[in-house]
Image (cartoon, rainbow, N blue to C red; front, side, top):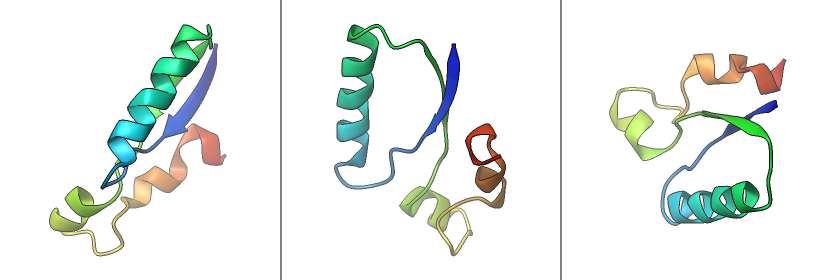
Length: 62
């Protein structure tokens, strides 16, 4: 199984990513999903860049 990082972001991002993941799973993709939070929610939590620093350290960015 391959581990992948995804982000849903803001706006239509969540709907697009949910649909994409649904298609991937229906196609039999063997993935373990690691969701990275970005966007408005992260910004409102006090992170002015909109992405947590530890998100850059995910397995996919190594």
